Amino acid sequence: MGANISGAVVEGDEGGPPLRPRLGDIPESCAALVLAQLDPPEICKLARLNRSFRSASSADFIWDSKLPSNYRFIVEKVLGDTNLLNLQKKELYARLCRRNPFDAGTKEIWLDKNTGGVCLSISSKALMITGIDDRRYWSHISTEESRYPTVAYLQQIWWFEVDGEFEFQFPVGTYSLFFRLQLGKSSKRLGRWVCYSEQIHGWDIKPARLQLTTSDGQHAESQCYLDNPGNWVLYHAGDFVVENPNVLTEIKFSLTQIDCTHTKGGLCVDAALIFPSSVAKEVRSSCS
Image (cartoon, rainbow, N blue to C red; front, side, top):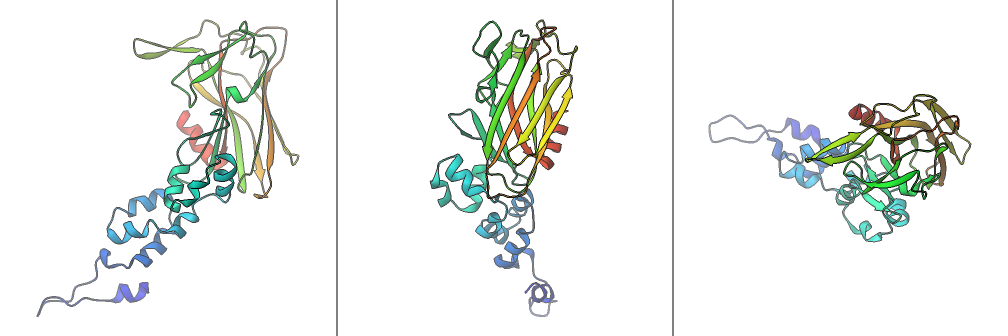
């Protein structure tokens, strides 16, 4: 089909040279085959070329290949909104690329708009934090620097431990888990966010320990010193690999600093984040 188009000519005015076909003469079915080979951002760019590409860009078979293999699990089991399955696949892709809260708003799921990779966020309120209910140690403070209305703020404690558990049906791939933390307490002053560092202490004496385990026996562990006051930092807990997309993978993860020879404090805990590892590299580079 494509060869016939490329070699075709259109008769010009009487006596004039024949006219070659224009881009707008490409049949919509051919345009759709071209778009199916591209990434979502490239599809959206070409959709602005002409009517054929614009119409072709809405074809379900194009966007079905861009959606993650577990999109029905996300819609039915996680979001609990089967009406989304009635949308065109292009509209469903766009809907899932937005922030989609679940579990009473304590978690969020979204697709990376460039790759369709599944990304997840687990807020501090969905984590198990030692001493979180004791106001001598912890408090929840309002913020505009998070996906969530509040973050957990540590004044001072001897035993620092944050644990999390999450079960999900992941598409095949390698995933990275991070904790999003900030040393210092931010508040708005004269329209600007200012970080107060008076309570920061204890993090430079011993490193924090990050761990991750999965239900199929994978384990990752690392240590690092918490630093860079006044900035939100992604601390890498580890990677895990999903080979079977049809089973639930249970993840357990933790962040600890339990050397009780000294106190530590002045830390904001926002969330745990899970990204496909390819997406994680871009996210970390944009944060650095």
